[in-house]
Image (spheres, each protein chain N blue to C red):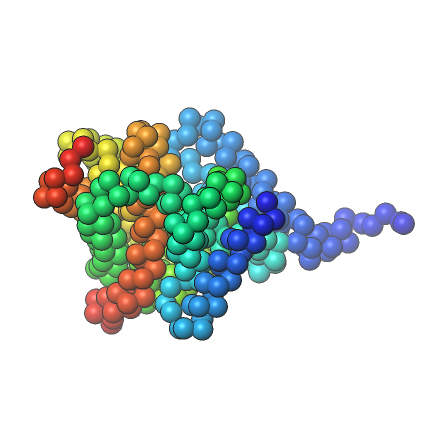
Length: 245
Length: 116
């Protein structure tokens, strides 16, 4: 075989899933490394770092998102099975759920509806409309479910993905100072509220602060995924029509 | 391992078929999650069996958001144009949701006598 010139190799790589699949894993590993080096600070989120690195790389190489996604779809595909897998930690915490069933259920409903209504309401007040406003609605839900909900209600799933991550980071950063300021000492209440409002990133933060808070945050995240998937398709289009029609 | 993956994929498959077939507004994988949850309650032994696979998958959950997140390159205009509105909505709404959850939890815990 005669050696190919770099342009030919690049032509091959652009069309093969291998390059962008590898790039996705490398970018995430770098993000994770930065996260650990920074002492697991929520602001240095590995997903956000990876997304920024890849976005710059796509821009520099002039690669369209569709080409990138042909490689990255193998990672993206696993979101479905991962969503199904969320049933296992939910089941493992069944005893905790039973021990505080009514407060949890009420807090879940309150947190979930507040997250959706205030996101759409504030967005509309700031002049957001249509697809952008709908993309905000599932922002407190764990990403795999939020993407599905966004698509169902007519939002832009890619925009929702980034809004979900920023919401998680926001929750992880503000929760502890906010709840300390309000003098809330019940770790169950603190954890559940953070899990409902700020999904997995909030849950990871809750586990750093307190074990009980972490367990309740995980339950809040799982239950809110179910609840938002049920109520968002009914509530979000109606709210958007009402506030920004 | 393979059997565990089959369990997850089968739940998702049934969920997708149910969502489309019945015209449900809920994403297929969420129905799959509810199915697996029901299966675990009916057969508690399944939890031990499937846990190594699911915890491996969930440990790297955040990696799985990256491809969708990169799709933001197609929405940079929206982010630039509506950045302030989006950040304000996210920040205020997250604070409101945390406060609503915490206070309702405490109020209902007091009412039902489920204290710490």
